[in-house]
Length: 203
Length: 147
Image (tube, rainbow over all chains, first blue to last red; front, side):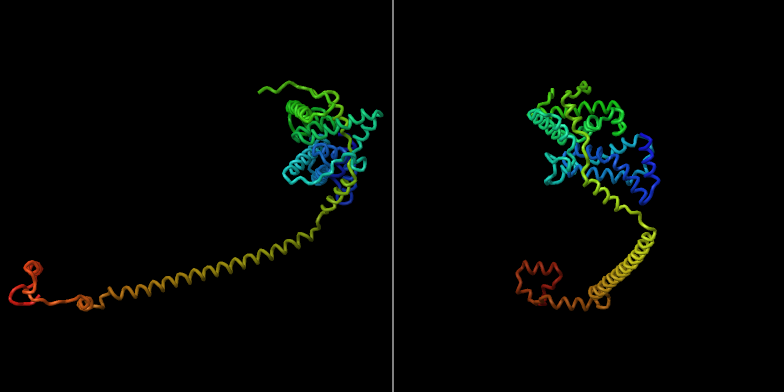
């Protein structure tokens, strides 16, 4: 853990009242985008992502005094995020499906920076359209495959975590991570091939 | 069962996935978290003092209502026992009057005998078979004595 981050966590653990708000505010600013990205990609829509990210941040604030520095702080944050996102997605499946915000074409104000930036890299409109379509297909796949697999893919490819850090985050062995990641690859490929219409090489 | 061999994602798919990271959290998340954390203001000690006094009052109220219920139950049970005993004694008096020795056997015989039809007949009025049956039961069937 970077020493400044460790100091921030210790500040939060020591502070009370207004001091806590200030210390936690700095930690929040450091993690909010990463937490939101995990929650959004696992749940697949903004409403659920906000619910899960909020739950994650509130849990962090309430339980930060329990953190014992036995693992990376980021692993702890990611674990809480993944669990909150999976729980929120399951609750959504159990509940009647209402209208949800999906971010499509929503732009920066709704947290869609990465995709719109990626789209902007292509000057050729055909290539740009293909990229948008591919992203849409992968986004749908993540939102529809087993949420545990989606979480693994998000941690590995979107958060760029190593196998070791994923193992630490999910509290499982390295072998389990590799095995589950392999199954997650298969699930993603199968979903994309069933859906069709993607330009990805899925075999 | 053996795990299938590791199959990495195709490069273009992996690139697409990697390009989907780095979202920017909307302002709404800041507002929500700030609101949620505002709700966890540490409570002053006075709160517990107040809660404790209310709990103590409710506990004593619970005890008194329980006592009332119990006393009512005891009263009801005692009343029920008395009713049963009273009814039993009364019914016992009714039924025991007939069987007790205060009424003599002779009185009972006269009482119930009055309800039996008594008919006197002369032996000559009976057939030979009836005379034989009456004679076997001990009735005088000769000498002109009526049955």
